[in-house]
Structures are given as C-alpha cells and as structure tokens.
Length: 277
Image (tube, rainbow, N blue to C red; front, side, top):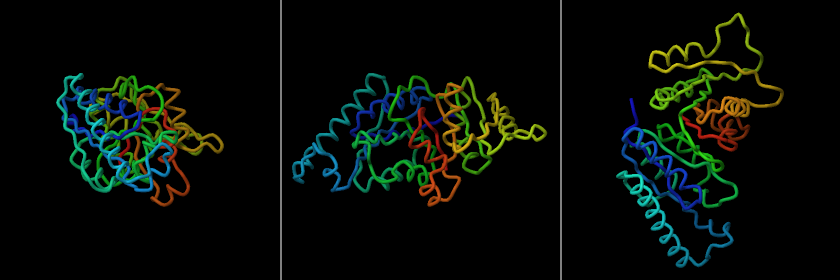
C-alpha cells in the first residue's frame, strides 16, 4: 500500500521551501509522481493589505508573473537536486476551486498552515479547511514554524470513534505501516472507567491486522482545555512527528463559530497534521 501521486501546494511564501523538501522526500519514499500546484491569492484587494505591493494593476500583474516564474524555478531546481522528475502546474481560476479540482486526482496533498506574520500564505478565506472538506483526499498540513526533521516515524492518532477519524486512519495507512511508533489517543471529558474496554483497543487490533503495532491510551481533558489542545499536549509528551485525525466532527458552522479540535490544530499545530474528511 502506497501513495502514487502526491500534490504539493506552492505559493510565494518563505515557508514554501519546507513543503517542497517534504514533498520530495515523500515522493522518494514511495517512488511517487509529484505535482507542484502553484495557486496564490486572486483577490484584487489583496495588495492593499501588503504595504510593499504596487497598487497599479499593470505593475502588480507583472510582479505576479515574475513571482510565478521564480516559484517554478525554485520547485524544478529543488526537484533536480533531489533527482526527482516532477510536474509543474499553474492553472488559472479561483484559488480554492482550482486547488480542489486538481487535488481530486492525487493520493495525498501537502498544504501549509497560514502564517499570521506572512501575508503571502493567505490564499483565500478558509482555504485549507475547504480543500480538506471538498477534495475527498487526505491532506498533510505543515506548520508555519519549526523544523520538520522527520515525518511519520512517531505517529499520534486522534481517535474519537467517528466517521472522519476512521477515514483518516485508513487514508494514513501507508504512513502508519512505515512508522516506528504509533499511539491511538482518545481524549475524554472525564477519567476513563477501568472496568470498560478502552476506546482505542479495537483500532489497535485493526491496525495490527495491517502489520501496524500500535499502543492506545485515553487522556481526560483538564479544566477548560479543549480536545485539540489536549491532543497537542500529548503529541509533545510522546515526541510525535505527525498527528492523524479526522476533520470536522461537528457541523461546519458549529466548527467555525465555536472552534473545536480541528480549528485548534489548524491554528496552533506544532507538528504536521494529516486530516481527512
């Protein structure tokens, strides 16, 4: 079991090189075809939010074309250094809809977390969430800070027994089968009953039949700390380099208004997160 087609989102941000390197490493791992999809913000008012941007439309369009060429050169040069044959795409059209369309022909997507200090990471409102929700493909979201030295050696699965979590585990199987350590983590509202079967035992048995040896544990939420923050704390305790979880176990509106585990991880992730819907 492996991923045969990977798609990495490319933009003009400083962090883009981290995604490129990670995507090339994963393509090497599975001998997969790698597509670099260059999609940037299409909002004509965006230059007003970037103090250094030219406001004349013709000048701005020339600058955008120069950036596109530079992004293509960086991607192809990195691929050449890695000895990988890759495919470059820079399609026209609305950013989110275009990304979703191209994502549906890939096995695994790599996107970047939006950086509040780098406006170049802004593509569209809810860009990452919408791609996760509508593409039908698993997405690895790479944090905007820190170094990604390894990915998939020590995996933490966020398990709540829902459809999205089950989908995420199945979608992550190629990564899980290569992992050195896998832990199935359930976040509970109160301390688990020792007389009841642990929530993660059936998942661990399922993984065992795929050749994946996994431990399982349940962590109670402390005070006002939510499930997402609790999961991040456990990832830090276990030195996990990847979190696997389902996206949006609540309704879309409820998730956006009230937050929730998905929103917490998208905003405060410290390690890459594989999400599926």
